[in-house]
Image (cartoon, rainbow, N blue to C red):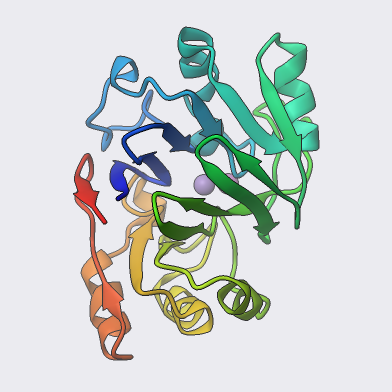
Length: 225
Ligand code: NI
Ligand code: MN
């Protein structure tokens, strides 16, 4: 069993009844967010990259809950310098955490702090938890190696950015779903800002035309898989 809560943008909370894992919690300054930071009391926070809409509120949540921040090495070094608990990994590496196995995959994007400091490579995340294998693409353009990700692991839930401009748009995201072949595709990274306005139902229709399943999660919604 895995409870998945969509925080909006690229933020998710995963809860298997024993552990809570956040990915890219971005609440402050995000008018689509429905949760308070107090509700996001997770022991583990995994980050795809350092951009403000992904690092988001991770630092304050980690400080309040003594959470372990799971990141690529350079971003982890930066967070550790701030006195936070980190587990530093890198692209292609996986590790068995108390909640399950987490692997960082490639993502084609950038990763720096607001003041321009390089924070290592951006990443996607493959997370095995609660009997599921999820693939959170992070911020990325379409790439052919997504086929490998779907070949190595049978992905049950794939979270794909569809907002265009900074990441894949709808049509490339549909191609990504074709490459990864998940049981269920879920769109993310859209409608937070005017520049990433996209219709998740257009994505759903296009995914379904490939005879694949797509669920559009409401902002703030929790579904059990
Ligand atoms: Ni980004
Ligand atoms: Mn982003």
